[in-house]
Amino acid sequence: MSLFSFNPCRRASLALVAPALLACGAVHAQTPTQKQETVHFGTYENDSFFDTDRFYTNGVQLSIKRSRDQRSDFAKALTRRACVWFDCEDSALLTSQTNYGQLMYTPGNITLAAPQPQDRPWAGLLYVEQSYALLSPDQRTLTTLTAQVGVTGPASLSEDAQKLFHKIMDRPAPKGWHNQIGGSLSVMASAERRTALEALSAELPGDVQLNTAGYWRVAAGNTMTYAAGGLAVVVGKDLPAVSPPPPGIGNKLAKEAFGPTTCMIKWLQCTAFGAVETRLMARNVFLDGRMFRDDPSVKRRHFVTDLIVGMRLDFPDSRTASHGPWFVQFKVTRRSREFRSSFPIPRHRMAAITFGTEF
Image 1 (cartoon, rainbow, N blue to C red):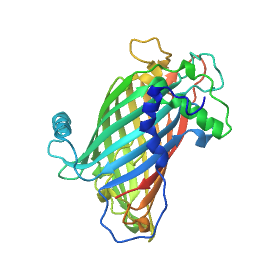
Image 2 (image 1 turned 30 degrees about the horizontal axis):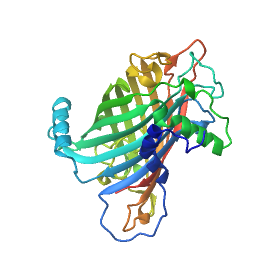
Image 3 (image 1 turned 90 degrees about the horizontal axis):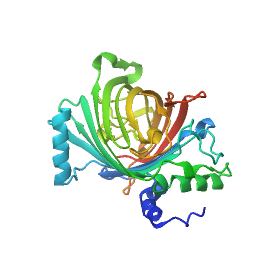
Image 4 (image 1 turned 60 degrees about the vertical axis):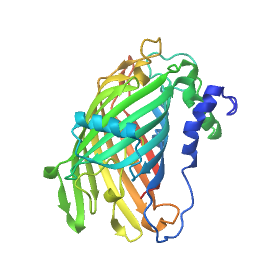
């Protein structure tokens, strides 16, 4: 299918994902300037780093992060109400972040046109979401509130994006997108609370710190409904008591005050991180299909676990008058089996590269 043969609904949806293709630029010499109040970064996530093309197979996201409080009165009222529930009434807004992205899911064999009822359904999501991070007065607890809205089905443009990418890269053409989960408005709200664990943190040789935080997250909506808990470790210098999750798809928000510092040479900063997270899944539209519709579906597993490791490199001398310093981050996720089938379902691995500027 030609890239220019979308129907009007798809053209409208393209406006959400096109900015993700623009997250690159030149690096210039350092120029004295005030730190930016708005920064941008893009994330590309794919399982092709491990020579597979299945399950959660691709994700792209453009993120815009702000340090100034630009919330509307309505947004302030919503966050205040949410904080009554999640015990963050005395917390101050740290950053806000807007994400535009696309997610893509396929069965293990994308060259089959026939339905594959025992494998993961074809599915896509095009979304926009807004997050707010709030830090407690003792700076040991970080609460993140997020609202997401998007579209599934053909309007997500996942079919068009995968076909175009495979054509450009001379890969096998996906043939089963006519079996994808149908179109609908998709909404989800989530809250995460991350708390520093002093007993599991330590000072290491060379002024290096190892900080550990425990966290929980709840999400509800017709996209996903689940409860999660996890443990996150960050290794670096001059770390805060509680570090935010690294930037990328599904990981919200950071701030200059939490930034990494020089760990090897003057012009290079680095931070390593790892996490283990377990989710109790009550609903997943990408496995269950739409509510009250006859969509493809599989038997969802109730518990899913992610193991995550990664490294982030910052280049402080690349700051200019027009943008903050550039950074690059690489993250690997190993996910347990998400559904049951009559044939063996392997664990899944994917990697993500995030590239952009920071404060």
